[in-house]
Image (cartoon, rainbow, N blue to C red; front, side):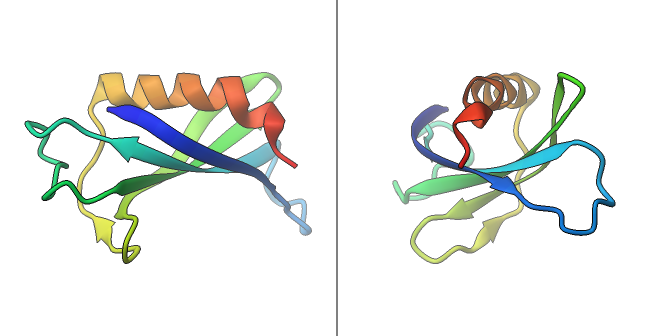
Length: 97
């Protein structure tokens, strides 16, 4: 999996119910043809919610979707892909506006 683009924003919690901060990432991803996510070369996005609390970062939720129509795919990431995505998000969440 290759990350080709990204956007990041901080999610505001006006109620204060959720401890820590939440960040939403929209990652443009490219997968090799042999990957089961590869679907006729259609572009994919990965929507990720990252939780940050006391210097502890973790992925709370993610969804894989087709960029063209926003349709969700019923697939999960492999363990090494999740680690790659978490590492990327940890490096970039401070860029959120």
